[in-house]
Amino acid sequence: MAITTHTDWRTCTDPAALVERLGDTLTDGERLLILTGYIRPMWTLPVMDRIGVRAAMDRVERAAYGLLDGNVMDGATEVLEVILADMRSVDFPENNESLGVGLCHEVVRWARTRSKFGETLEWVVEQVRQYLLYRPAPPPSYVPSPHELPWDWFARIEMPGHPSVWMQCYQVAQRLMAEAIREVMPSPYARIAVERDWLDEAMVHSATGMFEAGNFDSVEQLGERFEERGCYDTDILIHCSQEERHCRGCWLVDEVTAMRHRLRCF
Image (cartoon, rainbow, N blue to C red; front, side):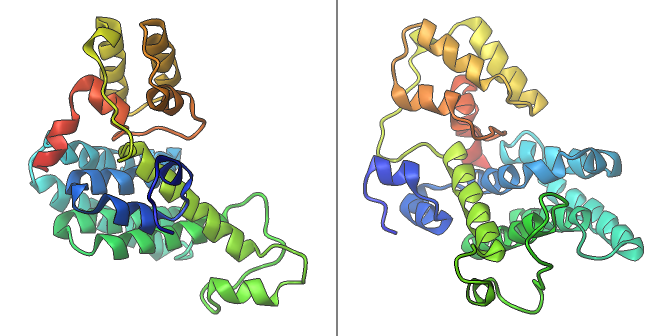
C-alpha cells in the first residue's frame, strides 16, 4: 500500500508501508521506542515485574532518550538472557511468558546493533501473532500447529465461510504495530505544532509525570486541557482521545515535555 495522504497514514494497517513512508526521517531512538511500545503489554505484566524484565526494559526506554549510558543495553541483554534461560529450564519453551522475554531480548539485541530494523519489525510482529494464538481466552476454534504450517495455509484448510484464526491473529498483530508507529510518529502530512500558549505549568507537570512513571492513562485529560486553552488542532485532540494505548515515546507527550530532541542523540 502506497501512503500518499494524511488519510492513508491514519488508516494504514501495514507497518512496513508506514516505515517506508517515514524513510530516513525515522531515528534509531524512535525505532527503539516503536518496538518497546509495541510489546509493552507483555513486559509490564505482573510476572515480568517480579522477575526483573520490567525494570530492564524501563531502563532501555530511558536510554533511547540519552538519559542513561550505553552500557544499559549490554546489561539488559545479560539480564534477559539469564531470565530466558531459567524459564526455559523449567517451563515449556513457547509459553506466553517465555515468548514475552524472548521478544524483549530481540528488541534489546536490535538496540545494540541498530541494523536490519525492517527484519526485526517483521519478526516481532510474527512473535506477537503467536502470542495472540497462545492467549488463554478466548480459545481458538481448534488447536493450531504454528511450528508446522505457515499462517497462510490455515486460510485454505479451515472450513469455507469461517475466518482463519491464524489469519486473524496476524492481522491484529500488524494493526497493533501500525498503531505503535503512529503513537511515536505523527503524520508526515500534517504540520503539528504545540503552541506555548496552549500549555500551562500543570500540563507540563502532568506530561512529565506520565513520562517518568511510564503510565499514560492521563493523556485524555491532557487533551481536554488543550481544548480548554484554545487548541483546535484535530490531530492533537484526536491523538489524545483515541482508544489506542499510549506509551513512552508518545509524540505529543514528548512535544509537551521537550524530550523529542533527545531521541536524535541516541
